[in-house]
Amino acid sequence: MKIVIINYGAGNIQSIMFAIERLGFKAVLSNNPEEIKSADKVIFPGVGEASYAMKMLKQSGLDALIPTLKQPVFGICLGMQLMCNSSEEGNTEGLGIFDVDVIKFSSKVKVPQMGWNNIYNLKSDLFKGIAENEYMYLVHSFYAPLCAETISTTNYELEYSSALENDNFYGTQFHPEKSGDVGERILGNFLKL
Amino acid sequence: MLTKRIIPCLDIKNGRTVKGVNFVDLRDAGDPVELAKIYSDEGADELVFLDISATEERRRTLIDLVRKVAATINIPFTVGGGISAVEDVEVLLQNGADKVSINSSAVKNPQLINDLAQKFGSQCVVVAIDAKQIDEEWIVHLVGGKVPTEIKLFDWAKEVEERGAGEILFTSMNHDGTKNGFANEALAKLSQLVNIPIIASGGAGNMQHFVDTFIDGKADAALAASVFHFKEIEIKALKKELKNNNIEVRI
Image (cartoon, rainbow over all chains, first blue to last red; front, side, top):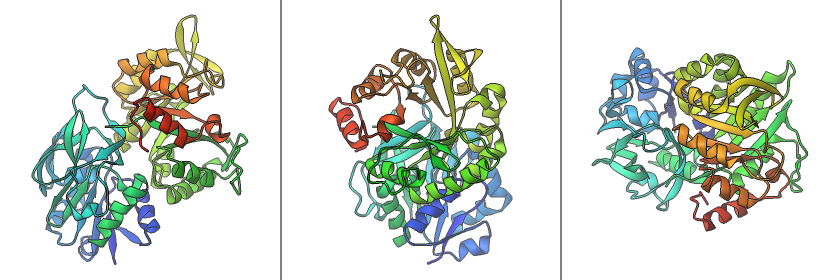
């Protein structure tokens, strides 16, 4: 199986590489469209600021490529947010894969949300064998509200989408590669799709 | 609900853990990777590695260590100690660290906080503040609490938040090493003052101290070293105790 992690200069890629190795697979890093297109599974990571990350994607033409991919694609954290219609962070236009707009938590809660929170109302093969209310590691200041494509809910100030799915596209706000053994199982589920 | 976090801290010198560590089941008590794995398996929510070595070899050894830790454990970890430039952080993150902690270098060059937040995002910038209460006033100290500055704790906390820190790790030099509990009054004040997470550090001696720092100190996370290393407190038992006190934890 060929696993490609999209490398566009925004993301803690090494942790995902290691998590995939612990699952017994190898991944390659690439920003080459042909290589990405030829993968069986594509992982789209991201940490940092949305408008900067989108600028980096555009520089390599990946903003046009990603929405056209046919194989399972997994956006993590900022990767998931960039797959939405837009983000309030830096007034960024997104890839429009998930039909929802990413907005900021209010100042009623500490921002960023940082730490372990539970995921529930799970509905996707991504969560096969995963119990309701398991804890995942999250670090984020912006969130995707609940929508038709929500496959996992988390509560911080309010209920929001901690994971999204549309056709072959999946996204999690949490970091499966940093969420202990359960997180690794979710990453493993994606690789089995 | 977002849980409170328990964070063991490992002091590292030339790639090895310092402070005798009382784990009988360890093959090599000085091996940070093995210790990290044990803490991760026991339910630690994060780990902090504080590099206190000062040799030329330091950086290379630290980077090797970061890679090995990242390859082994599947929880977040922070690396601190001797970080003074954007390039230092870049290489640590590239090798698998999730966050970095800066202390003296942020006091000497506050712009570093802005630069790191802009380049890597606030989520990976922890500003560690060591402070001592002198005549009712909390004063920021450098070099592990040895050198006083003119800076007041609460002013500095507000400033680091504004500059883009994602989290504050506050160590009270009055409490550190005493095992008499955390500086809950100052912690609660910090937590009200800034809107980013606060990690309590310094003073942990028993499980009640953790309960108190989460309830009275309003801390988001609590960090400790020796009580974990010497097995005076086991993380599993601690989390159970916290849960019994209606504090949300990951079990």
